[in-house]
Image (cartoon, rainbow, N blue to C red; front, side):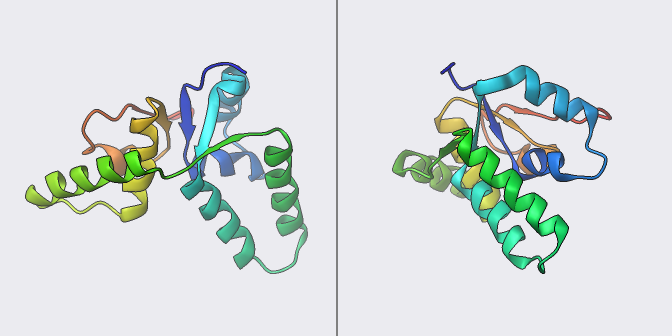
Length: 142
């Protein structure tokens, strides 16, 4: 397995389930190959979204997609003690500036930062205040 380089956010992983997925995202995912991971937080968000859907073809397709990611052994990184400590320090630093990013965004940022990965997301603004965090948007219109 190649060294991990990228942590995929929910909006990147869920793009493949859209009727007309963004070509830029799909191309970058193919090129990145096994250098990608996701966070346990993102994995939860994907499965929570699935659990909220009523039985349908769409729900079945998403369930099949998530199972294919599991079968492909997509790395799912935990919110570790080191990540929790970094997150706590960042929350305090940002609070002193009057900023309160969503807790889950802080968890995702912490997992990316402490694993030295670039976070791939469409929501650049959600992560712009985290110190030292590398973030990219793989959408075509970026």
